[in-house]
Length: 219
Image (cartoon, rainbow, N blue to C red; front, side, top):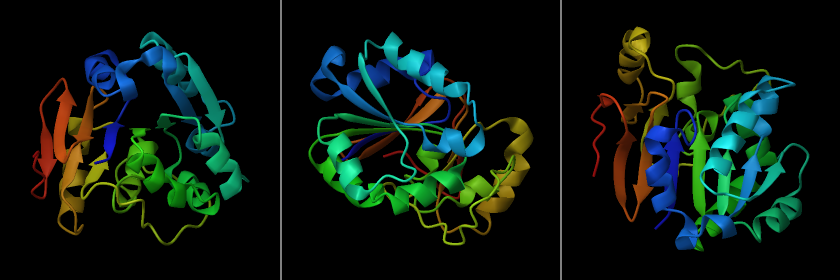
């Protein structure tokens, strides 16, 4: 079964122990990471959060991190990059821009094989959204801007629920309204939380109150 850690704010201290527990072979110094920066550059020319996320990985003992921008990559390029990686870490940023290049690079076609061979997928915000059935949550609350004109919001469908990241009380009414029209259960994550998917189980980890909408359940 696939192992995924879908976060709102990256490998923050509140979820660090869960990340360490699922590292392939549990040897942080040996785990190669494909550090997908695409969403970040879709939002900003100088995204400060990339370095923050990289430092959080270093703090976990991760040594081998390769920046990967899917923009203009071919499927063969991506396949070569992933061939010696054990972890895919997909940064946050603009979800629409990320989904465009996930499709055009062939990343979406290669990911299932990567997961079948035991690879670990870690998402941050936009990187978590694309693991869901759709990226419709990117249109809620503080919206991403759809600068690339995507009209098909179908995502990777690695999990059967939607995530809304960076959740705060001020967004409750917006998410509750969206829950009335979406087809999927929703879990709202603060930046101290993540969803851990492993061996067929789904568990919300980290600190703070659990916020579930439209029948989302841990299992």
